[in-house]
Each structure stands twice: as structure tokens, then as C-alpha cells.
Image (cartoon, rainbow, N blue to C red):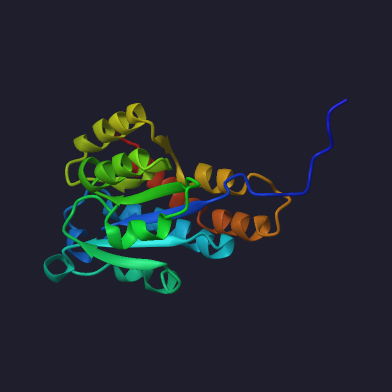
Length: 204
């Protein structure tokens, strides 16, 4: 006889969201940039419900500007926003928040897939963390770079998935208190999800 299901609990115990260099200056340069914005907005809305910590970087903001304004209402409780010249997000000003020996489950959205997202993922994997890269949440100037980068990261040990899949994996149980509110976010952004998937996965 199977054991009874225990009390509802989340599947991911130490989730975190990394938002990589989604800056205004890149809006017209990145392939399907508007789709990344849609996916990230959904992710950040759900993060507020689930109280998942969010970490943001900009790349040389003095020259390339700040994070896109669409995120402003959703980033008020972000753990930090770090400006950098490194391509990887895993800089001391950010990595200091991950001093625990227990690995985190970190999901990455942003740009560019083959540069900053790749180098961040490699550094996180080397540091022992579980890494998720959202196929509907990353891109590059040249669309041909995206699939190659994701294929490489998959082989390096990152999990390539989608925003909706990650959100439900983060929860893991419809019995948790936040499930209905997250499901509402998913429902309200359903058309955005479809648009993002059709756009960003069209070349994969």
C-alpha cells in the first residue's frame, strides 16, 4: 500500500531568478526582445507571489542604460541590481548572497544567450548550483546563436526549459497556499506565453 501524501511543500527549496542585462539600449538590437520582456514579466509576477528572490544585472549601464522600464513595478523587492563589465552575472557583488553550502536552483532570463547567459550558467554550474535557462526567456542579436548556445548549455549540465514548466516545478504541489495565485498569473499571461514561445522557439 502506497504511503499517504505528506503536507504540501514546494518542489524547489532554494529557487532564485537571475535577470541578465535586459536594458533599454538593447531593445532594437536583440532578436525577439519584446518576447523576452513578456516572459520576464510573467516570471517576476509569479516571483512576487512565491517570494522567490530576484537578482538583476546591467552591462555597463553608464553607456548602455538601465533595465527596461516595464520591470520597474516588479523589481521593487529585488535583492540587488548590480552593474558590471564582466559578461557573467556571477560577480562578487552578487555571488556574496550565495554563501550557504546548500546549492540554489537558479533560473536565468536575459541576453545574450551565447555570451552573458552562457558564461553566467557555466559559473553557476561550477559553483555547484542547479541551473535552468528559459528557452522562452533568452535571446541574442543574431537568432542563429540562440539554439547553439542552448544546445551547449544542455550538454554542460544546465536544464533548458520554459517559463511555465519552471514555475510549476518551483511549486511542485497544487496544495501549497500560493498555487491559485500563481495559476492566475499563468492564466492571465497565457496569450503572452503563446506569443513568446512561437517567436523565440521558431528557430530551435
